[in-house]
Amino acid sequence: MTTRIRPSSKRCAVIGGSGFLGRHLVEKLLERGYTVTVFDIRQSYELPGVAFHEGDLCNKEALLAALRDVSLVFHCASPAPGSDNRALFQRVNVEGTKTVIQACQEAGVQKLVLTSSASVVFEGTDIKNGKEDLPYAKKPIDYYTETKIEQEKLVLQACDADKGLLTVAIRPHGIFGPRDPQLVPILVDTARRGKMKFIIGDGSNLVDFTYVENVVHGHILAAEHLRPGSPICAKAYHITNDEPVRFWDFMSEVLVGLGYAAPRYHLPYLLVYGIALLLSLLTFLLSPLVCIKPTFTPMRVALAGTHHYYNCSRAKQDMGYQPLVSLKDAIARTVESYPHLRKGT
View 1 (cartoon, helix red, strand yellow):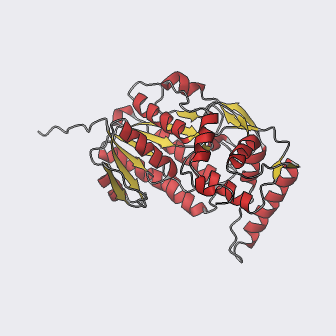
View 2 (cartoon, rainbow, N blue to C red):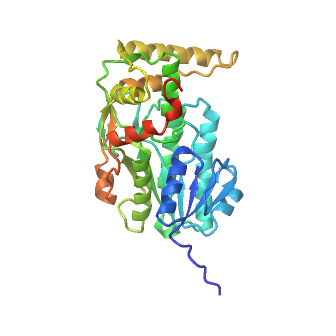
View 3 (spheres, one colour):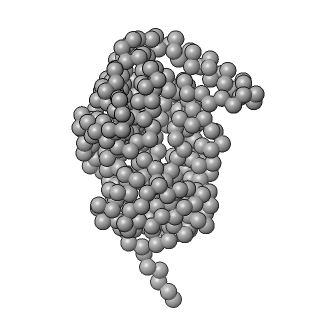
């Protein structure tokens, strides 16, 4: 009779490890002595000691090859939230996640940590100090949120100590930091086109922006606390900087740090939201005739004009989470990491 050797607890795989969060996670895992395998549709960098597997998330055989002898999986693959490709979200976030779960079960993976999103409870209205017991959004405001809800449910429902797979979901909000391909580059591009002059609403709305190093820290803490009998099994956790900030103050600090003017003119929130809804409706009606990719969406208006910040006390209590980098230092580090985006360059 052959006894199966359990894989080392320091052998892990990062699905989506070529992305913004994924690469930061890979680098920190290496620092902490983990052996890391990356599975992604593309390889965007090279690191000593990291094995890359290129493949489709829905290809179970490709996943199984990457998960051989792996005990811990981080699943942080997802299309960019700003995409309007419903079929892509469904395929990656839902069908792909079903395949990830099946592959983990067949490969004997013991722990699965999902990168979810705080948006799973957001419907476009104020959330102040929201806790994890808020219900899932009944009317998700975009395809990203709709599929992240289904994804999180799939992963948490797969937690079964008797079958050997434990799961947990991390819900970050407003991730930013060096190498971010979304927030800062889009902000600067908008400023360069002269379209960052306006504040939506009165500018008092508080939101969470979370430094990528703190998000990574939350993921690793979750993985290291995930064991049979742990209170974190099959639960979701908000991970934030624990420093809610006025949305437009944050944007202004980044812009001014890079040499651009801060927005200063106010537009009524309801007016702007109504225009965004109208444009979305027109896009839907005209899309069979004209290829339109909307950039001014109700979701983006809601994110810019409402309160949405979250309570991370459960993460503090259950796994000892504390942000490693303050918001002030995080903004400074982020601005310094984009010299090529400074005004005049």
